[in-house]
Image (cartoon, rainbow, N blue to C red):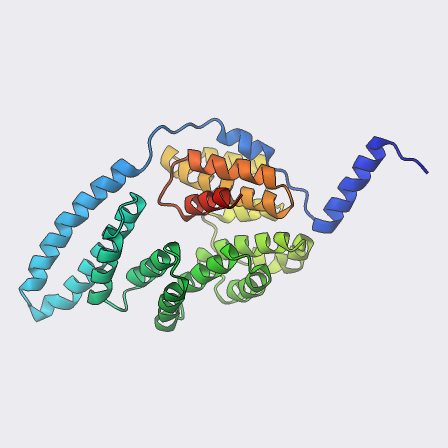
Length: 300
């Protein structure tokens, strides 16, 4: 029996969506992003932040040198955070060796500071020192078991390493345990994408109630709702239109990255690459999504 090309195309589409259980399109999002063109990056702002923190670190070092017991602990914490920021900023500017120098100084002053531990862990991971990164993040999880940040960071690393089955199961547990934190929405995104990469996106519906019970309604709530087909492309774009320019630039960068991952997960690698390249056009270097998009392009 012969079938027309139209019939075969429709039949193939039915099979595809029956397999993935997902029919959301992202064409309008990509078209919307084309409205924006950025000639400036964050380097100037980062450089200004470095100058500010260098001055602050000099002031705090003098304070710490006074060795006043009533001040020393608070000053040490503040100086440690200052060093950590200097490490992050220099890393973003691509300055070699300097970031590690400041991270070591930060850690020597405070081995329990939340911000410092997370930043050092991420720096180790970026440098390919994965075991050191995992050690630091475990320290954080031990010290702050009530915080989702450490677990979300480890989950993202598993996602990067394409351990999608582990990500899916861990994410479900984390969303149930931490439904009120903003990071739970990023956990939800990694969960949905991991399911898509395994060809199990239709199974997301089984945990839809859990996803909808996440109480944090700020960003990236709209993106999660869009992936759940609770919001349309037009509604997501309407939300982005309400934001001031700098915030829209940052959040649209995230939208493009996660849409790129979704396209790739659904077998549309060329389309995913288009989204990843568009992320880099936004020049939002401090954003993790920018770094991840860059990595995806390098892997292609």
